[in-house]
Length: 182
Image (tube, rainbow, N blue to C red; front, side, top):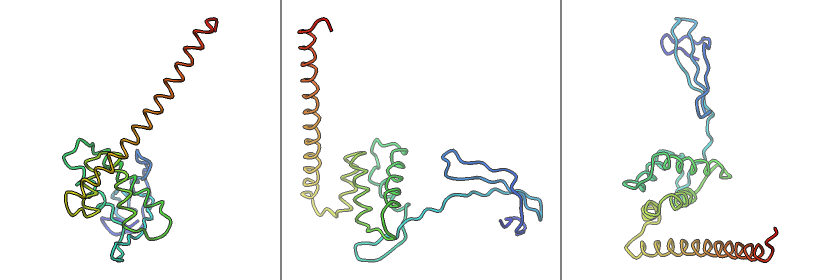
């Protein structure tokens, strides 16, 4: 490692520590040329695919761009910074797991929308309005109708599960009533 003070290339490691999250190693080093100490950080280089835009252009994966879009969608919403960072991490991991050296921007956008839909409906609609290029209010209404339809379907599933549970409880009560010895 090159010394930042004198440029000498030889040093010795005096201390190594793993970060709390386990993703980085901090090393204290002492230059064998000038004797001054400095710190280095080691981490695994992440392999992220190249993004293929709608028009066919290719650009490097930019986590900051993704993060700023998600933050903009979540602006003035009761969403914690930790929740936003978790969404960004989930999107990053999904992109890392994507098979291939290139990933269509459409896949990234859809992944972000799935994460935001789980997190906050308003943030989801905000992001979707930009991503899907809503032209007018009817586009918003169509998206909201779709969200409400999905929520209603989920609610119906939960109601059905609750009814099954109630029926099972009633059967047990009847069995206990008919067989008090158990």
